[in-house]
Length: 461
Image 1: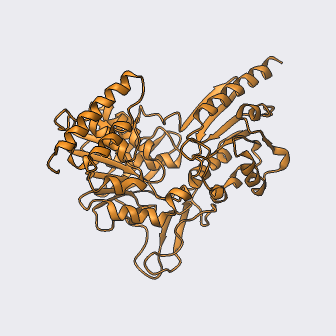
Image 2: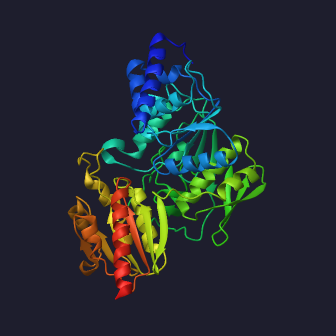
């Protein structure tokens, strides 16, 4: 840690004062205090006191969910920590979190920090902060304009991750597992599942040839996109041997058995059996074991976990289930996983698609090419009786839906989400799945309310 300067103290005290004022005004001090501090003292993050154990979480998808799971389990076991749960995951948000966790002299007040770190922002964070542990959930293609491609993001992470940081990475992700090759790593994996395939069923596979010798990779099985088990027939590149393997998953009992490196096995409760969340929970279990929690302590937390409702929620209303599922627009992998859920979940369904990218941050400039990397074809299924499209760029989505082969008579649309929902035909429907963007939470609530109104009217007729 660098010696504190006068600029540092001015930045710290000013940021703390600003945070108090913002809270008195009823506003969230999520990034402004940190932004102010960094403007006064550019290496502020380097100088500020830090917790003894810093847990970082990065990757394309699952960062927020993993952080929430870690925090909830730590809280259940009476650990004290700081986190950026209500702040941003870029440098200014992380600086704000660190400010909240120190006294007026800049000394850390808590021993643990849990920080979600945007993978594109590590160049502004890691030169000044060294995580004790860093989870990398996965690496997929994301926003084209912001993240370019996976090789670029993997290169950024490799360049900036501190050599002293111990990585916890997904062995089943051939891109994620090969970042920062000189760092100590702990690998986690899920053993072969009955649902794995010999052929990739997705449009996108972000690694096809060996990055060492350019030979086409041979997959033993695919799970989704480039997740699975593969090797290069020409050199030693391939899926690394995992230290923690989920080798038995009981969907009905919601139990996961983990085979550890020392050949011992432990059983854990899993609150959600979605494959993405099973990977997330596995990463959380591995991390918590590293910092000293026992199997019993971890299980006590897992039993009480719930996936954040902005990510997934399920409610039965007058005999029809209303499900909300985050599809995360501009992210073709997250959308594809959500669309596959809509296909495979039981019952006759209506899918309401609200994956617009015209949110405040995007300013309407995002390239819509991501929709053509997204598996809209999953929505072309006999159990999906109707697909409803809404949002400012609904016409673009309609083109993609038609290209996916969804019959014209199944498609309904309006720009306004409530007007679009009004076109839902609920006759014979067991479930309505609302596939929404991260920035469409309020619109999603309006859709749910409209659906309930329509269901009620249907029952009274």
